[in-house]
Image 1 (cartoon, rainbow, N blue to C red):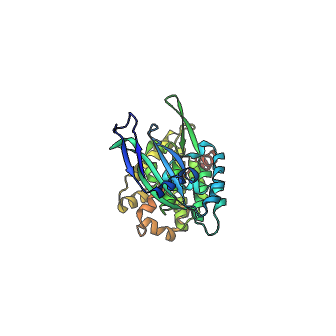
Image 2: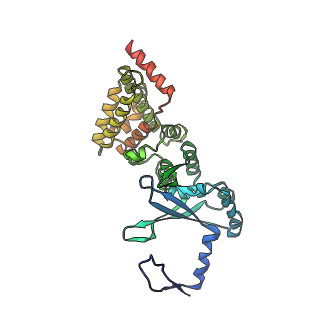
Image 3: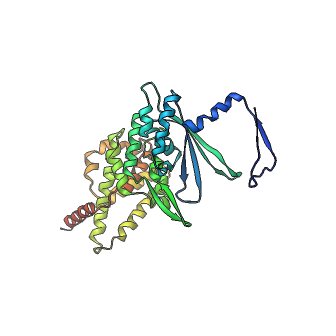
Length: 336
């Protein structure tokens, strides 16, 4: 079967082009309108940059699937805006309509392709990433939890247009899940980017920590130790700061993040965490659970794990009035 195509005036090719394929493959094209979905990804730092993710589900019974597929059309168009390849795949696989279609002998799996613009071919969208994603029970739980903890999306005014921006943290978590990593792995890349850091809500990260299932309890204890250290460090700052002048707290946050961001090896990180906890003084969690925390602080485990945990501890420290009152109480008790 020969197929001819005439490119538009904006295309680099102005002559008729032709490719040949077997007639049977034409039926594969029908799979797109009856089974596939695409999602929109907009850059969080360059709003004019847009990518698209095509989700190709693995279907056992196409007839049954096609009948229910149209129920997805009842979703709002905003639901098809995501922030990563993994976010697109899991948004589709965890949709209630898709879950209802998954029979006991049917694997909840899909293939997802990411299309974007590359420097050598700016005239068209090019496939730049592809992955096969399977939604296990734990992935399903953590991904849905992330969508509850973080805002679904934001509407941003840009060049007289209202643009939909999906949550950056949900996308990063989804990518970790589909790659088989812990949800919090490598999130330091977000925290090091000042533009992205502004988009993160402390309460959201805190809720993720409290409600997630941890492979090792020591990981959660490590975060609690960092939170206790922050509370005591902030208390000392509050103690010598006039009421209402809390800019010093923000400067301290930036300083700690900057020091942590410069940790490039295990030795650097050990020095950082020793100084960080040392400035706080006596930490009850560290004293009570030092044996459990030793692998994370001594380098027995991969130091990057402890680094990532420290980053999310800093990002998740709640800034609510309740916590501020607790800090002030500690500050008062220290001054007595």
